[in-house]
Amino acid sequence: MTAVLASGDAIAAIATPAGRGGIGVVRVSGRNLAGWAKALTGIEPEPRRATLARFVDREGRAIDEGLVLWFAAPHSYTGEDVLELQGHGGPVVMRMLLARCVELGARIAEPGEFTRRAFLNDRLDLAQAEGVADLIDAASEAAARSALRSLSGEFSRRVHEIADELIALRTLVEATLDFPEEDIDPLDRADARARLKKLREMTERLASDARQGAVLRSGITVVIAGAPNVGKSSLLNRLAGEDVAIVTPIAGTTRDTVRETLTIDGVPLHVIDTAGVREASDEVERLGIERTWAAIAKADVGLLMVDAREVLTEGDRAILDALPRRAERIVVRNKVDLCAGDLTPIEGVPEAAQVVAVSAKTGEGVDMLKATLLKVAGWQGGSDDVLLARERHLAEIARALACLAAANDQQGLTELMAEELRLAQHALNGITGEFGSDDLLGEIFGRFCIGK
Image (tube, rainbow, N blue to C red; front, side, top):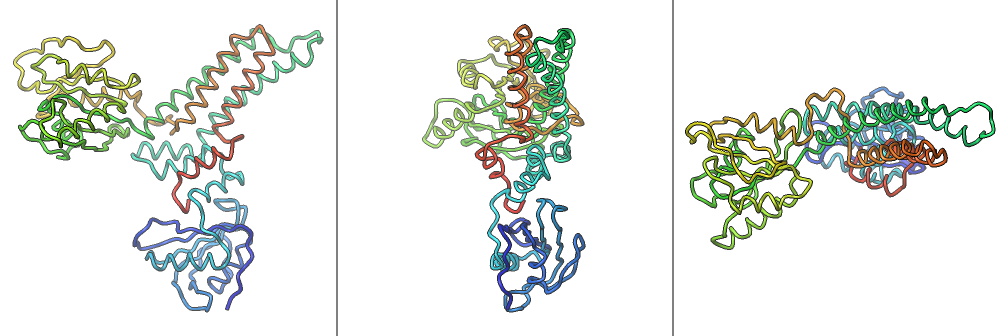
């Protein structure tokens, strides 16, 4: 019988998805785990070398047979000793292995705790750690490539580049404050203006790439709305490339929202087809129309579908008015295949709205609609320089830009300029986690999957 081993605060988790699979992995992280390997397998594996072994319980009975890998600190994902047990991927076997690790003194890891330890042990900064989760959750190849760039440190490198320039400028400003009586003036006005202009340009480029990355990461919510029988479900099917919604000539066929996520040029679009807006004929349709209005109120992009042969109605205008102020508006004139000759201009369309003519039946104009969707989403095409960003990254970059603009306005008041530059650096540091509250870290890592 083996004794329970003292391990400090060791954590363990099943690191592979739930269910059956060819291989399952139990991961352990803590201090001095070489003894754990001996207790679990009866052998002392070499660091960073896969060893075939039997996994045994307290009584020495076999639980499974597989590979054991031991990564000695600090050369591991978490910076601590890490033990990986790769066995057969049955749920019962995995639970038995996990229970054995708990018996030896580990506790069950919380979501994201392995990556949080990597961050706390300086194996990753916060932007890289978030890149881990984004790579796992990537909805497209472009998003995966951008997430990998963040994980590899590209996002952090760009932030540090700006921070280094900012530190150089702060040094000049602070020198002026500390040595006002010196004959030489370290803060050469022209040089300071040039440095500050460069800083703002670098930060604006970062903001642009990060905004595109936010679109690539989260996608946009597109709501297709309009009167019954204008072709909303047909358009969804055309965009999706398959019949995901029922289409009939009967008005009111769609009685509930139909959601489909599709990808255009690597950008995820969460498209919602809604019930036609009209006076409801029964309780089921009334509930469906209520859901239509609820979806419209949360849209990033509103597609108002109209018959190309008709004018905008009061109901159409009500839909446009109900969209959030921030939402983009596209009026889709459908059924152009039924129109003879050129389309007459449509009146009553808001000035900021785009107008696209399509035939959901034949596919005419659908490519133009897709391009318009990407344009209003802010996607400029190509993902080589895109950094997969989160809302908090955008907020910190926007705060840094605001502080740099304020510093530019305060160049005649050195104390105020120095404070704005300090606040700008504080905002940038928040992206990589060089400062951060426990609440922020808890929120970020709490969204990770268990075992990562």
